[in-house]
Image (tube, rainbow, N blue to C red; front, top):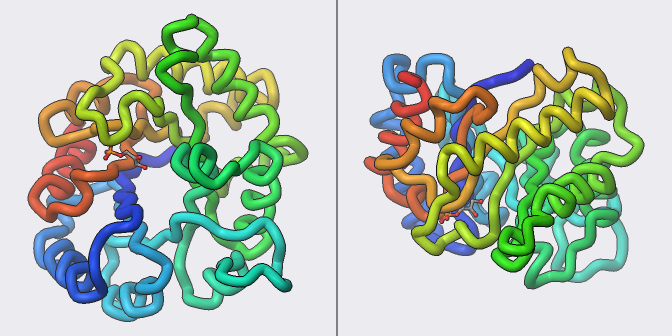
Length: 256
Ligand code: 13P
């Protein structure tokens, strides 16, 4: 079902102590009134997931996701984390194909496709990220790039699988740069993705897929972004590390 979601991607930030403090801070301010119908997800470093899940055991408002998983179920891949391992910690979702993984760790669309399968096979939702570089934006070919990521990343999945796949549009030129896609630019891409989903699957499926925007989303620009018809919420980097900012973005989603 299409949901309003605000997800915080903590990336490689926070010590253990800082992470637990951030969780406690969020627990204290995220009330029924703030959260409303908004699904809130936090994505701490994988090392802390077990403790974070435990500290949220009695909390009805905050779901927990991992930032990545390996494309294989298990095996000789020193240092890697598999989807079955993550599922055994009782988390809810895995971010897959973040541009930082694609850019710095050579993750291909095909690898992302295998990782999404791993998430779904282990009853976890997948948050699949797509987005173009500045060069691709300026060349005018950005929609082709984004749809190529959608086509290859979602290869083989059927309509029912889309119940457990959230998409996130994150223009690389807007991540951590302070530069945001304008609400119109973001809406155009989201509508383009939804249009493609309705051809690839059907209109009902396309209508039901949650598509998040990510890239310098802050309390100041969140209301305008969330006011757009096809922007269902946000995937927040920097601002998710601050309780007040993340809460303000959640409130913006709840009120929009
Ligand atoms: P920023 O909000 O820091 O730009 O990061 C966005 C992002 O990459 C979320 O996954």
